[in-house]
Length: 461
Image 1 (cartoon, rainbow, N blue to C red):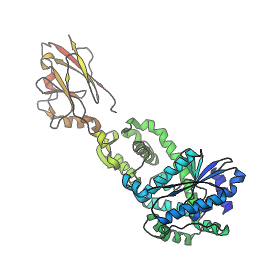
Image 2: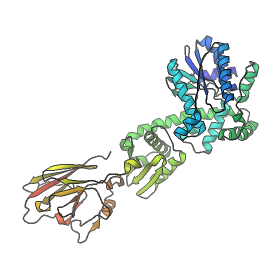
Image 3: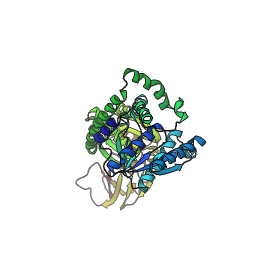
């Protein structure tokens, strides 16, 4: 075992001379073996060790005795000891999360504090090869994203340095044998014997079968994990390089994506672009799985020009022709607006600015973003769309729904409810700004008191 661990540490550059290491120690065989191993190499590597123990307050007297056991061991070995007793049940109720998640968050917060206090650059935890197999199997069964399928990393950034796991290369049996060979006492948690938790069920019923087929299955899974992490890292970097071509606009609650640029990407990069977008909007606290990513891919790949998908925490993805936007529902609900447009001045709307300027003659060059109206139609009102809005487009005898005009002109669904509608003094719609003007706005032969309306569209953020 020692040779396996030494080689693993060297391969993954886990420990360097002079490191200060906070070691998470529960008192069980895994963490006691890790603390003992690091204690044996501390002199040659000139390491400073700090043992950190958390009493989660879940097992009453037993967990209190675990704390005293670890404290006594550290005193005997001359290792700095830090401990904390935390009311995990209170934290669980406060944050409405499971017991396991609450315990983990409390534990890692404590480890972070101790790393900062002791200016440590490493946190060492005793996850081993069997833990790796169980983790990868659980994530496969429950639809983890690509990076999650790779399992537990041997080294990752954490707090003031890195979190390392030197025992991922060895099995539980090897650790127990190590404890026996070195006459190490340890504590046992009775909850590990029950099938209450999903991990325990995999440990008791799935892992033994795999070990019967291959006693070294933990080594195979660790190799798979390392290969998948390398592949995933490469693909994510490629996806990041394509993000600038795919993203049209973004802020912390909204991302607008170019569907055409997205569709040009290979499918593996499409998945990772979606993952990067979701990770950005959820700020790294990913409540989504591979199922959500595949559902998004199917929606974006469908032939329908418009579609939507509800995601966790009220995030919504809406496909509209050549774009797709991701936004939280609270951000999506536009406030209706009504502005009075002065005869000389401007009003700003969520999609752009409308400016009114009196003119003597019709300008020579006009675009679809310009409208010349006569003074008797003013003062005008600029407002957002309302249900049932209709306009008589120039050249048509009857009226048409504004909704249908938006569809015909392929106006993005994210902009329709805030697109500026211009009414004349009688309340009749004379212009869907930059889209279509009404027959009512046709100039008379007199062309008296002309006003030039101009719509300057901006990017929606």
